[in-house]
Length: 129
Image 1: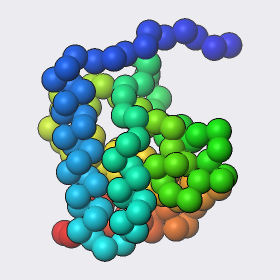
Image 2 (image 1 turned 90 degrees about the horizontal axis):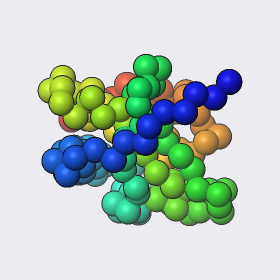
Image 3 (image 1 turned 180 degrees about the horizontal axis):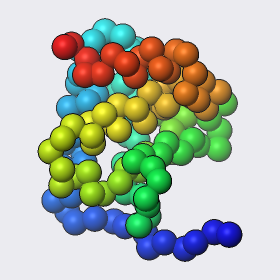
Image 4 (image 1 turned 120 degrees about the horizontal axis):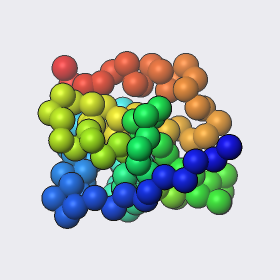
């Protein structure tokens, strides 16, 4: 049975921190040379937000657009990326890892899921060690 949970917008500072962290992750992805510029540029327009609370099971979620099969880049496939708001207040790197994870979902699409290609790329974080 579905349990209703409150939508969370977060404070202005929390939303700013989320977007700053996303910029850091996208810059690392760009600098790695592993991803197309087109995909990374397209993710600049992805909607970023917070999961409903409380959410005890997951750290992040990538929602795909209705037309994701027709899209030619990651931003076109992705409707929004939501993360657990509490990660904004931690300084343990989990927010950046989760954003990277969700950006990978955006790039590889729903058919890849957590498959081999996804896992190989996820294992590379933090990029440029």
